[in-house]
Length: 132
Image (cartoon, rainbow, N blue to C red):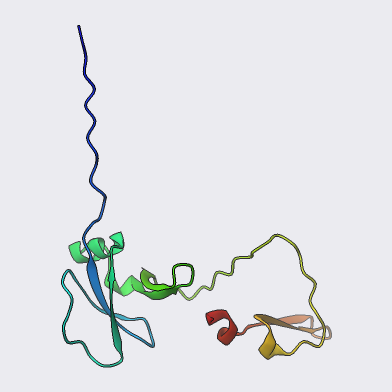
């Protein structure tokens, strides 16, 4: 008895392109469509993506309110992602670097003030440097 093995290539999960129109300043998404808009309001941008989140939003299985546009610094392009108020800072290495005293807060990504009398620490993130 001879047996045959049949293999078929699976189609990629999402080959459909979606066009997202969003507000430049806030990242709020105004519309997600399968065809590009020819006329969209000033102060907005339209991008093309194949992100599978768009399919879920279009089907109604995901809420548009939970998503927004973010700048992907690795790929250098806009992409849709979950909205959050939490900033995740990833380290390039696992070394502990000591704080430098008398540092200008405008020159560093993270600035720390230590109040020894009241036993408090104030941590500030410099958004201008972190956004670059």
